[in-house]
Every structure is written in structure tokens, then in C-alpha cells.
Image 1 (cartoon, rainbow, N blue to C red):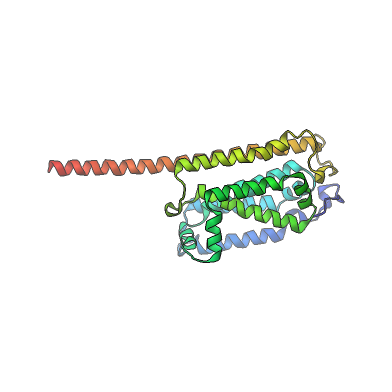
Image 2: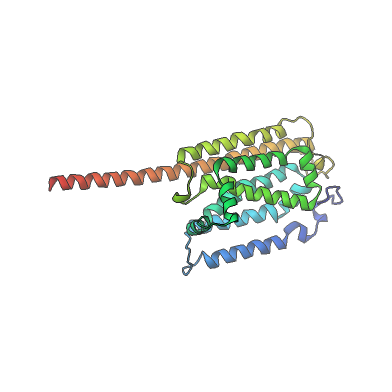
Length: 284
């Protein structure tokens, strides 16, 4: 990826660069396979309408972040748009796709005993999961690392792929939909989300309050919008990332509380039923 700009306007990019038909086709194939094997009445592993919605939404957001003009603008013109892309890729897509997969598939995967699943089990341990993603995310936004990554297309692809994978492992301890695979209580999940937000804050704060341009990648980028020069664009990027992070984390906390209340109500109903049965037995 060459950031020594030869494209002054977005229109200088071709259709392939702006809309990435290869990524669109790949995501389309994933969607077709999902609905073929998990989304119809004859599927061995069935999914609910809500799961289908979550997975489909995840694929749509994945294309928006990686295959749409948003990607070109974020990589070549505006750091703030790049941060939107990052937030969608790592804070929105993984939760949707985790919640969208059939539960039986997770049970099948995690019952496998091989080196790959051993690695997955290790990386999804809560402490490992949160520290690996936050560390990689923070290192990625160090100026010297960021500029080096963005200057090389292959390194950028590799870095974003690793961040994408570790985003899944980071979200798993919180959103694991299988009771048998849960390693955290509901209260611990709330603490996990708060800890993740706190650990992400320094990277966002560094960007928001730097007071000078951190990334040479965008220092000489063509001015796409006159009201957002490089320094203001950089500050906006940090603010956007923090706001989107808080919104997503708020939704996840709402999901945790909803499941928590639902589970407690089910227990209360069971206890009430047992009390009624016991009272009926005593009267008889």
C-alpha cells in the first residue's frame, strides 16, 4: 500500500480498489455456505432467526469496513475514517459473528483434541484473550509501528488479519453462548468489559491529546475535506474510536444483563414450582 500519494481525489481510484469485488465475492460465498449448512430446515445444526440476522449483519459490516470506499478513504486520506474502520472490524463484526454461529458448532469445535484447538482454548482464556488483543492494538497504534505497517501492503494485511483473529478471541469469554463453555460468571463478564475499556483508553488518549501529528502516513495526504486538517483529523480519530468503543461495550453490557436477568427469572420460576410441588405434597 503506497501512501506516497499519487491519487489526489477518490475518483482517481478504479472500481476494483473502491469496491473490492474479490472481498465481496468471498463474503458472499461465506454467506451462501452459512445459509446452506446452518440456515435451512434440513441443516444438521440449526440457527434461529436472530442468529441469522447477527451473522448476516456481521458479513455486511465486514464488507463495509474492508471492501467499500471506507477502506480507501481510511488508508489514504483520513485517519479518523481509518479508526471507524478499525472499530467496525474489531468491535462490531466479531461479536455479531460469534452470536450468529450455531451453538452446536462450538460444542463440536471445542470437543476436538488437536493442536489447533489447543491454541484456540489457550487464546480464549479470559486473561490471555484480553491482554493479547489490547497489547497488539496498542502496539499497532505506536507511531513508528503504524507508519511502517501502513507503508507495506503485505504487512498491513498481515497485521489487520492478526488483529481480526485476536478480536474474536478477546470477545469470546464475554459472548460465549454455550453454558458448558463459559469460563466467566455474569459479574465477571461485566468486570471483563470494564477492564477492556480501561485498557483501551491509553491508546485513544494518546491520539486525542497528543497535540502534534503522530503519524507521518497522513501528514501529506491530499485534503479530502477542508474542515479536517491532519491534526484535527487525528484527534477526531481518537474521539471516534473511544465513542464507538463505549457504544459497543454498552450494548454488550446490556446483552450480559439481559441474559443474567433471564437466567435469574428462570431459576426463580423453578424454585417457585418446587415450592408449590412441596406444598401440594404436604397437603396431600
